[in-house]
Image (cartoon, rainbow, N blue to C red; front, side, top):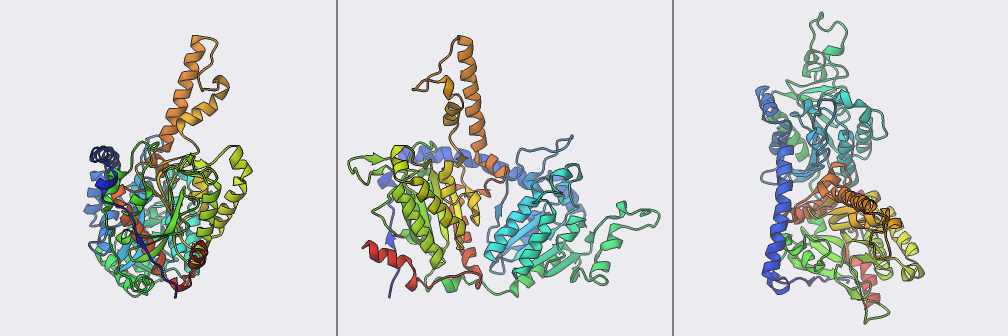
Amino acid sequence: MAKVILQPIGDDREKFLDQSLFAENQSQMEALEREIEQKRKSIRQGWGQKYIDRVHKKGKLTAYERIEELKDPPTPFLPIGTFVNWAKTFGEDRRTSPAAGVITGFAQVAGRYVVVIANDNTVASGSWWPQTPEKIQRAQEVALRLRLPVVYLVDCSGLYLPEQSQTFAGKRGAGHIFKMNSLLSHHQVPQIAGVFGDCIAGGGYMPIISDKVFMTEQAYMVIAGAALIRGGKSQNITSLSIGGPDVHVHLSRCADERAPTDREVLQLIRKEIETLPSSATTYYRFGADPMPPRYSPEELRGIFPTDYRMPYDIYQVLARLVDASLFWEILPHTGQEMVVGIARIAGLYAGIIANNLLPTPHPLKPELKRPGGILYKEGIAKISLFSRACNDDGIPILWLQDISGFDIGTEAEKNGLLGYGSNLIYTNSTNQTPMIAVLLRKASGAGYYAMCGAPYDPILQISTPLTRLAVMEGRTLAIGTYHTKLDDNFNIQASSEEEYRQIQEGMRQVEARIEQDMDPVASASRMDTDEVVLMGELRMYLEALVKMCYQSIGYRRVKNPRIWSLHDIWALEL
């Protein structure tokens, strides 16, 4: 019988990192995290206390309060898409749309993970802004791929009309939300909707395909509100009389039940979730229990140098992320710039592919060291093989990126890196097993693609406060932009002092712009990454995501560990 034997990794922090350096790293990290926490707090306030008070005056809960009431206490709500539209304004009055006016993320309800999509009723009555449809569809996509139930908390007055050109007509415009509703239903993914307020046009369509629809007494769903109906005032009609629970629960049957208040509707939703099959995570633990890492995940704040040019030991990072700090490393003696292997997270098996930042021996010239964080032939072949084996065995893969890119130069071309890289890209493009990308620090060039970056459709891509996502660093790009004005040592060549200053200033501006674009919050604002996660939260997110990969059954292959393909690799390696 083949067994999975996990080995201890990691050390007490004092053994590998000086206290003063640890404290310096931690201080710098905490400063970055405070900035992110402040931005989160601002987003959570929506359009401010005035609008929160307005919601409460109507006897309603805010979207965040609804989520708190819905989820199992004391489990956390894990948001995704928090920073969408951060620092963007719209229209002549420069209105903001915190989190694009919709809250999406994961909550545990009755012991099961669900995807929550909740209109923020403190931001333009839950309207859809530019990127709101894409954000909703992204959450629906995650639910579809993991077969997670979806809970819609609908309180939406339709498109924010001054910006309708950016939300209505495109391939991923608002109408695609309803296609995703349909695809979820087609694949038998449960959808449950609570309708809490004025749901007009698209906001009215959004809940209809759900399996169950519950309405409060204040809620209505209409294709067009009373204000748009000719003669509405003279007929003395209201949107509530047109499409309230009297109509949709008892006449049209577009809704199933009504309840007086938000809290009672949320209790109805919880009861529906309780009727669904329970999570399969205990079954897929194969007798193991979840265990915390032997070393505290909180120490990650001080292990990572904030200077991206400085290396760190990836094994010490893994030791603070995986259960009991135990790891089965596959092919440890080849392609050492990459680390691959199996660990348990929340008691469940996960494959891990991570960049090694430390210098490693050249395979043909052991006296030479090659820089880490780069993909060479051996490492590419290793992670391609491991990725295919995990896919065959049904093991979710966590990609931990800190990569500068592919090796370049004469040796790289002679070694056929283009071909090896294409093989890896093909593998990741066709894998069916869930894959999750974590951008620990650098995510540069084609290496970002090769390690399952967002263009290769990971279930989720999360960043940290240190993430730098770009083709290349700002200084490198500035040199490339002005290379005709530089000598072989990258010194400016100019015919006059004025020209010298112009080139110098131009290079400075290019570098500054790229540095700004690489900011993880700016990246999340553009939806280039799904969420910015603090270092101390990383283990919590990974636990939840791995559990979600195993919650539902019957939609993908999950092999018993006795018959994994990985055992064949291990046997041949020995």
